[in-house]
Length: 231
Image (cartoon, helix red, strand yellow):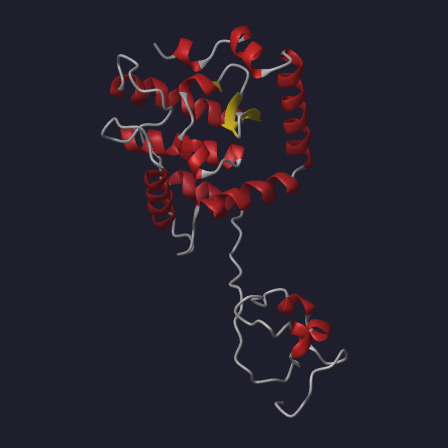
């Protein structure tokens, strides 16, 4: 009730800490969950909790790319790679052919003058291989483009183009309206933590890649890259 004064015994933070976790800290400032009692009718702002994707949701998302059409083959490779690597849109959009190795299952991310090794799942490697063989080789016969993924017009993929693909596929799969790349990234992290086998596999693959050479430049010389696979 509104006549109750909030204190340590009846504050929202004490009575319902889970709900207090959804408190919007900036829009409700200077009020905090400790300043409001559970019976108060004061209007406040809450942070919308985004539904995490489960395994079936991810399968439904991939299922929208069923079939051998050019756009389906490309989009499935993009979705599989995003889910398997937790990449940001800007990282995927700037990913180059030379930075991906399907034989050993890794890619290299260039960021802040540093190179980071990221393992790729076998499924993602297979889908990327299908994309190269069935789509990209015909879009860029003379290897003029350096980007891994191209638009349907043959141009290098943009960050905005990736967002459009993800949004379109999520609508086709009947997922939540606020679905975004971050939703898929959070699903990757959650599912990885839920599977101890996946965690061990990821650690082992990273260790193997690091043992093969002391830096990514030597690795590029030691293993065949997509530039060699993709004439």
